[in-house]
Image (cartoon, rainbow, N blue to C red; front, side, top):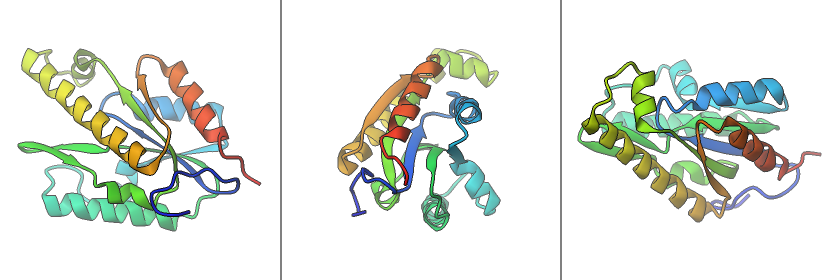
Length: 187
């Protein structure tokens, strides 16, 4: 597979990247999906990093860059021959702004599609037990806008299918995961 090319050939690993803000329900929805469709494998970026003793909070720019390198290397070394759903973030909030995961992180991954899962900011705040404050709603709206933009940019660069799904419509996520997972059949 050439760098920057979306997976389209039979027999290749098929990785679907599902991104979205923390609290949208990515992990829960994907776990339920995989329970019903065991031919898919669910990988969580945060778990891979945690297993490798990488910091996940209060990150410096150097930590963020190193985390992306560690994560990409772990994914490439895994040699999975299955349909993989990678649950992660394309944009990470940092003090004073956002860190967009570099497009180069995605370049060597065997991506077949990207799916952005979004949710009503008020629901995200309620899930976290935070008060629904207009200022916090705006922050989450902006985070989701920036991540959507970054994921769309990656999909365009990789020439991969890209979809957005409301987290409340889990059946639509399932439909898209099945569609993109079956787009590449294994021998």
